[in-house]
Length: 232
Image (cartoon, rainbow, N blue to C red):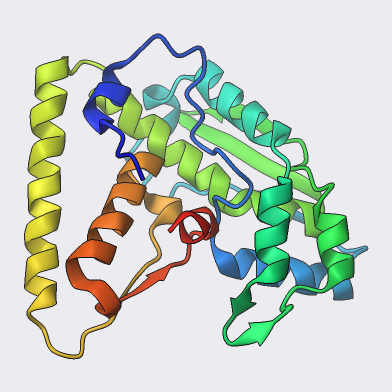
């Protein structure tokens, strides 16, 4: 897989919209398992998911542009599961089982779309919520958090020039690789990635997953991110 120059991509401001969430598979695998259970057992139950910033000293609405947040949320709502993704979900073994996803569920999933959201500002914080049938609102959890986190990262890096970004990511990669080498020396260790909802960015998470895969081999048991698992 060709590697993306993360620093150059971050500095490139010519994108009309650089999507944070690129696929509905850009989520944790357990969310799809939960979704199948909700779809089968609780199709008529409504639920509301609400963003709660537990670090109230971080004023998200002062750091993240509301227009950019709406653009990213709106983009996520345009996503659908592709034919390739549906074939991968239906044809793979997961946890040693074939067809862990029922054919009827996959047929329903093919037309899935994230529902609408409500967004407002209050006292330096965003009030973001998703209401409706549980089997639709539940998949907002991971992408919404990933969008918030990456927009905050982008805001923090906006003042950096190309050389500063290049050095920043070079140092981050060196630090990550040094950790990988220390992990490799530990007998019997097993490492998995569960970083999607709190990641710095999609590109950085992908780089870390690929680094762990190469650096510690079979000691890296995989990632919970379905899109990255499919691509790796």
